[in-house]
Image (cartoon, rainbow, N blue to C red):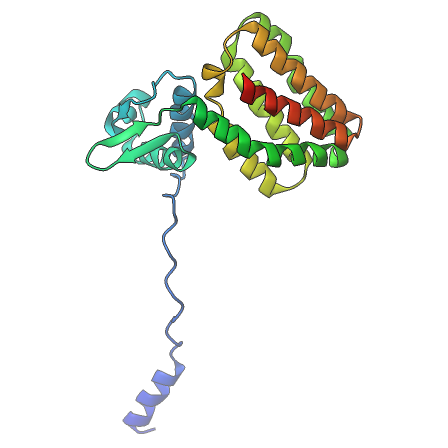
Length: 236
C-alpha cells in the first residue's frame, strides 16, 4: 500500500475526538473524600446554632481550621455549605460573618414551613408504616427527661430528628430535603423564642399530638396538629 494511502487509513482508524461539552463546575466544592469536610460542617454549624459562635462574629478559615484541628480544605468546604444554608454571609472586603437572626427572620422561616410541613404531616399519616411510627415515638420518649434537665441542645436535636422522621414518612425525598433546610434555618428560635421548661413542655406536647394523629392514620388531625404547632412557634 502506498505511503499516502497507509496514512489515510491510519487516520480513519483513529477514534473521533470527544466533542461533548465540558462539565460545568459544581456549585459547591466537593467534600474531601475523607469526609473531613462533613465533620467540619457539622462542628461549625452546631457551634453557630448553639450560639457558641455569636451572630455578627467574623470568622477566619485558618483560625477555624486550627480550632478544629483540620486543614483549610474541609473548613473551606464547610463555609461554602453554611453560606448556602444561610448561616454565614460573605461580605465584600470584610470577610465571613455569622448571620444575625431577628424575630422577623425566624417568623418568615416558620411561615415558609407551614405549607410544607402541614402537608407533610398529612402525608405522613397516610403513608407511615408501623416501624416508622415506633421510631417517632422512640424519639419523643427522651423528651421529658431532657425537659427536666433543661437540656436545650438535646431538645434541639430531638426536634430535628422528629421533624426529619415525619418527612421520611412521606416517602418523598424532595419534601425531606426542603423540610431539612427550612427546619435548620429556624433552629435559632430555640434561643430567641424558647427559653424555659414551660415552653419546652409545650413543644413536647405539640409533638406528641402530631405523632398520635400520624399513628392513628388521621391525615386531617395530623395536619391540624402541625398547623397548631407551627402557629405556636410563630406566636412565642
